Image (cartoon, rainbow, N blue to C red; front, side, top):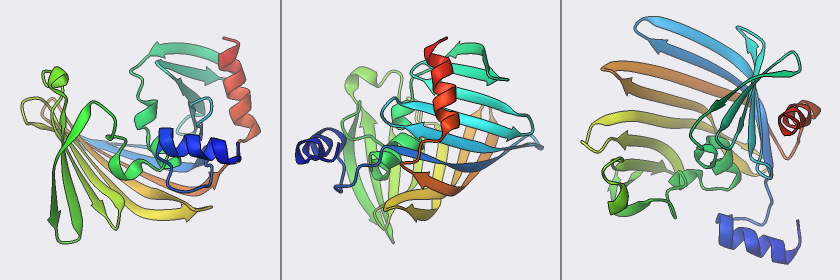
Length: 225
């Protein structure tokens, strides 16, 4: 994995900017949700290995429960057993974990996607780029505005095909772990049925290239399911 030929592969395929191979990321998270005056707190740990592309969220509060995302499947694990499997959209490649490991977080993975860069503006210390979907997808998707600050992703705004804002995200307080830059605070504001849903996620104790036994145990369960 550390030979020159493999590094060249990563340069071409994954747009990796350095010669270091980041293959996994983990850490602790705290999620605070607020909608219509009601709030919710979730505390846990996450793990992601780019080789098998499984995302593990291990909640410790308010309940102990584990969720594993694998392609278009979301598995719920309780007491060492798979309790359920739900079909979901495959958004793994656009997860903050995957984009960070591939060092594509600054453009949110839009390069090479169904989106094309339309315009770039500068406003104070922000560089704001406008991305539009390919003509074959304009009936279902709207434009995306992306801003970077000091070459790091700062904010992203998603629109529907009618130019309505459907979601905003802000990425703050970047930390560096083993040479990998990762935002320790992510603010998401979604608009659903004329309601504003705010989610603030904070990350800490980020680890790189360290796959814990619990991750292997959970993924082994998925393999045998």
